[in-house]
Image (cartoon, rainbow, N blue to C red; front, side):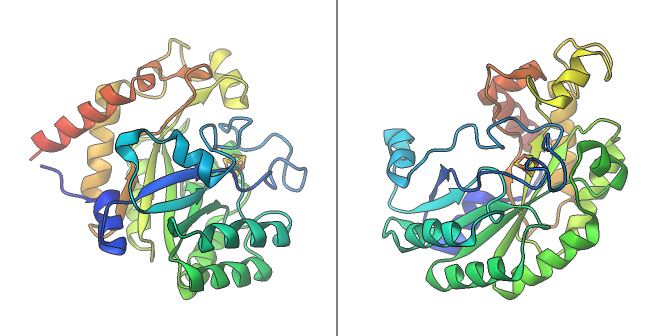
Amino acid sequence: MVKYYSANDYYKDKFGEKVYKLALKGGTTCPTRDGTKGCRGCIFCSEAGSGDFAADTIDGAILRLSAKQTGRKYIAYFQTFTGTYGDAERFRELYTAAARDDRICGLSIATRPDCLPDEMFELLSDLAQIKPLMVELGLQTIHEKTADFIRRGYNLPVFEEAVAKLREIPADVVVHLILGLPGETKEDMLASVRYLNGCDIQGVKLQLLHVLAGTDLGELYLSGAFGTPDGSFPFSLPEYTDLVCDCLQTLRKDIAVHRITGDAPKRLLLSPKWSGNKKLVLNTIQSTIQSRE
Ligand code: SF4
């Protein structure tokens, strides 16, 4: 069996019980969208800025959870766009109100490493005094060629500096990697995982590449740039399952795994089509995890 540190175990260790994440709208744009570093966003990103399922308010997000999932503790997860890019006062108001809410046991803010000026570090430090803070950084890959292709807009030293400063706050750092970016081999993806093993990070999200309609990646895909657009790019389900297990085996055992696949809005999903059946994907990965030596 492949052993790894699950997000559930990490939250239980941190908060003493099971907690639920409330996906909330936080940021409103990104430097790769507003003209600062580009206008069309990262090549794979939907118009909702990676927050297709995020709610406007804590009450709304709790309502969306099924009755089975309602617990006593919630993490306010500000998921959309770049959660530290824009009006610092607006962020201070939004995040402080969430941190002071009795139902909220911790905050998680998704952002980019190149969007952490001093005033944002000050805000994050203040928040960490109120509730435990997790900051999610979208790294996606360590390979500069791929980073250029996806229009990530910053290089690795920027990421490394951000991690070091966030750890001083202290915030736990959760890093997003995308599996299946065009041009990357399995070895390239495992090299990204090995690189993270050398970083002072506490969590990782392994995100299957979703090709979505309305994105530049979607247009390239439909034009045949990555082989036949038959709904199987970048992997078949068995290939992806195998890769995820290799990543989990490679990953340092104290790094919590917060995601092993991902959600895509079905109406936008061009490929891989099988990923629309999330239950099947998770069950297949779990049974491979159990059966691996
Ligand atoms: S992936 Fe993140 S940084 Fe890139 S455009 Fe989407 S929300 Fe912005």
